[in-house]
Amino acid sequence: MLVLSRKKTESIMIGDHIEVKVLSIEGDQVKLGIVAPKSVKVHRSEVFEAIQEQNKEALNVSAEFLKTLKK
Image 1 (cartoon, rainbow, N blue to C red):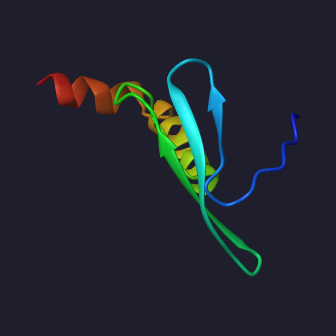
Image 2: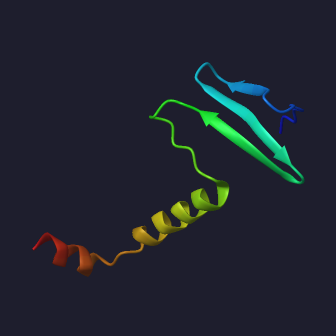
């Protein structure tokens, strides 16, 4: 893990096309802005994990159900 310190209004670049900006710092909360191409999906980690879990559940579909969908 790379650990960086940034102040308000400073940013970091990830590759050539993704910029993470520190928008504000209030107490223990930091607001970040992410500038990325539309082709790059950006999610909060808890949303990403929920999507991954739903994808795993979708794989557990019975063959009989799939046959029903074909009809």
